Image (cartoon, rainbow, N blue to C red):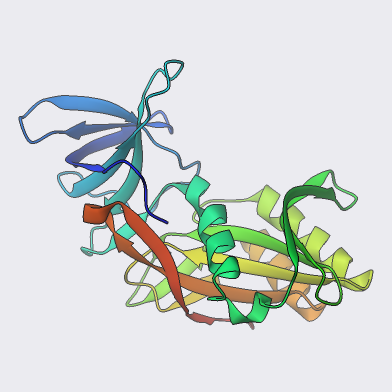
Length: 238
């Protein structure tokens, strides 16, 4: 995925009020930008580090610039715009990068399903049993190469796991895809130390037949480009 417009570089000053961040530009001025991440952004906030942001020409936006990439305290790059995760996964499915999801004829996005008023990120059809695909963005690394999800308590994430498991039991296929937007992560696990309920729901879903995949992105902010390229390990048991 490459943006048509070039991303600008700044230095992170602070993130605050959840959806805002201040950055310093090369001329010494500061700018408030939108932070498109509802999580804690744990281990992604390093004041004074390089960051990159995109610009929108929309006349209705109060903050026309959007934070895209952070530099972590370990010096890795993290794609913190969770809104890009679905597009990255769809692009990877269509390009055949995610081999486990190859062979379907159609991809439908944001389809209502389940008994808990949910929407599935992607419904794949025309390749055998219907396949329900839920996408989660991973940016938390704690320890060398060890990624975790979620980075904050996520009751919504637990609900999605229950819905996926129910789809398997109804005869469909259900897949959770971790979109790893972090240059240092080599394996992903449920963050039991952050959200024990999610961790329990995660392993319960696997036991009920939900498949879990993780694919890592190559992040090239200088060229406004992020793309999923390869799988990484998922810890499937506690």
